[in-house]
Image (cartoon, rainbow, N blue to C red; front, side, top):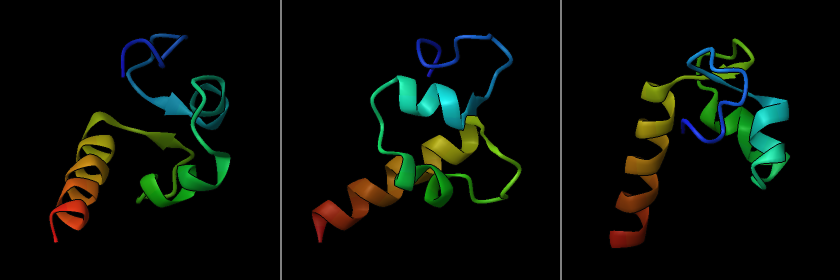
Length: 56
């Protein structure tokens, strides 16, 4: 996450997300509180959900 957070504000904006090569359409799914930023907690939850889906 630190490498994606280019302005070092502790969150990932949609612009940072896309610049890191992530699909723009996935941003909204990860930004669960819809504040326009992805926090460490939101990213961790999304990764855990993805791992769980892959394990099923």
